[in-house]
Amino acid sequence: MISTTRTRPPRIETVRRRLDRWRQTRRHARAPLPPRLWAAAVALVPEHGLYGTARALGLSYGALKQHVDHPDRQRGARRPAAFVELPRPRLHDACVIEVAGAGATVHLRLTGLTLTELAELTRLVACPAS
Image 1 (tube, rainbow, N blue to C red):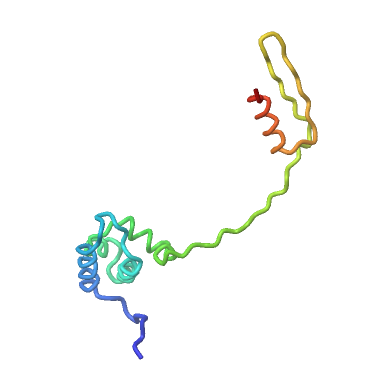
Image 2: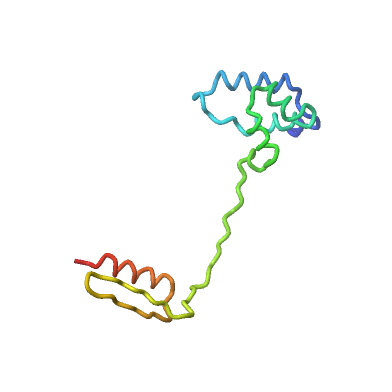
């Protein structure tokens, strides 16, 4: 049985040839580099350094550095989003709203509203239905 994991990093010439072949056969000029090629380039960094690897393979130094710094990006792994429930905040103190018009000023003192209810009230006052 043949092992699919490498015990030593691939030689830089081999990776360069794989990159050249991919560049010639890709559909779009700005197509993203496949994760397997990024992984091969990252495997060369300990031996050749970031600059040496990027230069020899014709890769962007910054992009290679990102893949070295964040190895989970090269596999496309994402953390699952966590659900966070926030309590409904209540206005503890009275909220005073001052509305100034052409000839009058109205003061509203509101207590015990949630922020959502206050936002809805503000929307209704600003844009009353016709």
